[in-house]
Amino acid sequence: ILVSFSRDDFTSSEAGVKYFIIGSLSTCIFLFGTSLVYGLVGSTSFNEISVFMSELYSTPTMLIVGLIFILVSLSLKISAAPFHMWTPDVYQGAPSIITTLLSTLPKIAAFAVLIRLLVYPFGEIIVDWGKILIILSISSMLIGSLGALRQTDLKRLMAYSTINHIGFILMGLIPGSEDGITSICIYLIFYITMNLGIFLFILNMQRDQISVTSIKDLSGLYRTQPLTAGCVSIILFSMAGIPPMAGFIGKLIILNIVIDNNLFFLAIIAVLTSVIAAFYYIRLIKSIFFDDPVDELDNISNDHSKYMLCGFAFFNLTVVFYPQFFLNMCASITLSLFAVK
Image (cartoon, rainbow, N blue to C red; front, side, top):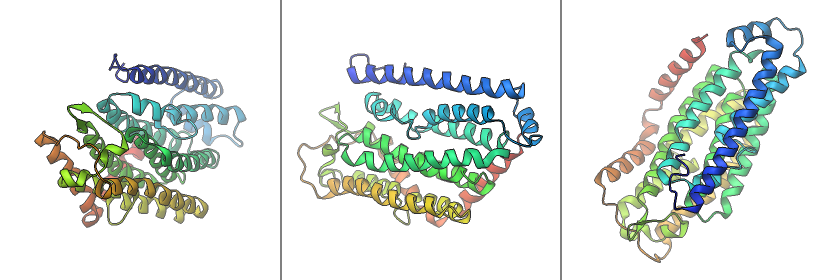
């Protein structure tokens, strides 16, 4: 309903239909996977599934199939490739405020469910679901980085950016360790602040009081709104993983976890796709500072938006001075997550 809220906009209605169909399909797949697990275990309780798994000498094939269906459903929710097909169209068609919501809160909730599901009841078969996550992670990073290169709409580009970030976050879950979960929590915090900063700017991108989202509309922004241009550039540098921004700290922590678990090939792919992704972020910054303006954007008249944009930029710029705070906070979150039975 929220995605198709702009009733007079065809793209919004189209996005709403796509989201409804994909969401319904995701629910059906989830229920089918859950029914397979229930048929074997006789319960949907995490406790009883965990006990059942610990008593097995070999894992039944149907149990793994059921888990695969559940993972496919959750992959649709988090926009992990190759189940990302709805993301660019829905991000572009939905009202910008709803796109902001879709790119933040549901991702946190879905990852919380994913972590609890895999690490606790299915922790005994980490070798099996770890392979699935590796495939999802690699495909997300590749599609997210390559798919954004030809985009001309800022919201579609942010959709592929989300897919790329999701691939990076999934790497932290593959080892199934507490350190990995801590790294995911840290990355999610930084990802949320980066996304909120960019979409706050997109919400205020207007020309003659009409919202615009084309990348070419950023041309020459620095000449008319230097403070806004500087804040947006800092957040884009952070998304690209340029040191010493928050995005770099988040990626570095996850890469350390991956390397510590001897997943060197995954780390190499992550670095290569980050380099590709950096190209389209820096292309936006180049457009902001060096391209000739075609038509000037309206100045941001809302002081609250200016203060919040500066706040997000300042946060991403200064995280390097107090990373231990986030490490300790996220370690506490992880301990509480593992303590819940």
